[in-house]
Amino acid sequence: MSTPVEPEPPTLGQLVGEIGEDMSRLFRQEVELAKAEIRQEAGKAGKAAGLLGGAGFAAAMTALLVTLALVFGLGAVIGLGWAALIVAALWAGAGAALFTTGKARLRQVSPKPEQTIETLKEDARWARNLTR
Image (cartoon, rainbow, N blue to C red):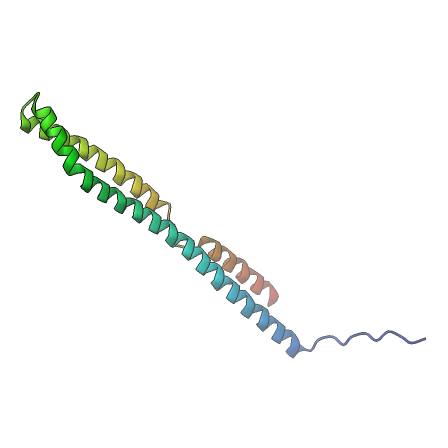
């Protein structure tokens, strides 16, 4: 009957090498996570900027024709000066509403990769515990 051969414990050099490989792999994964988060936040910012740009373009294109129509329509009832002032106030309200919505959407964009920062903190705590 033969006795089972126990594998030799890893050497210090092997352990250090494995830790180095693990740290390298962990770092690469953290970098990939940061890239993914930044791409996601950039997409949100792009959409918000597109909404603001679209709002400005729509306001410019429609403002002229609608304003003229309203001014002349109201001008038939009241003076053209008063009609123009009323229509301008209406457009100012619409512009303020669009601006407020776009600004609120921009506030939702986070420039910091929060998830990456949290996992880096966890990695630092883990690495500190290894050295103890």
